Image 1 (tube, helix red, strand yellow):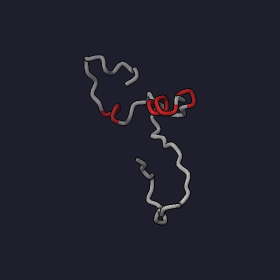
Image 2: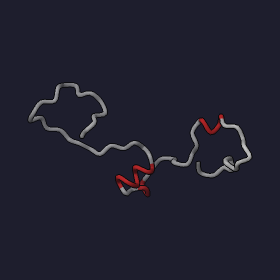
Image 3: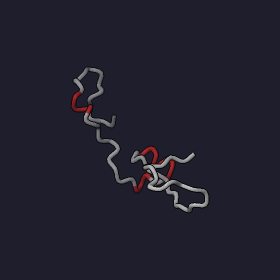
Image 4: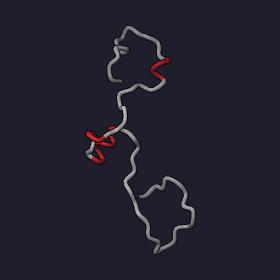
Length: 68
């Protein structure tokens, strides 16, 4: 199965030639599992999202500044 990022400008017809490239969802898990290339990952996998700012502090130890 193939999923296109955007709809084609013209209809795809039998015999058309095109290039297919492996996509990237910008997650370190995919970078390691699909491409075996975590050493070249250029993202920030351990920075919490905006929801981390809105959470309340609790006594369960979940807010120690570690990786989420």
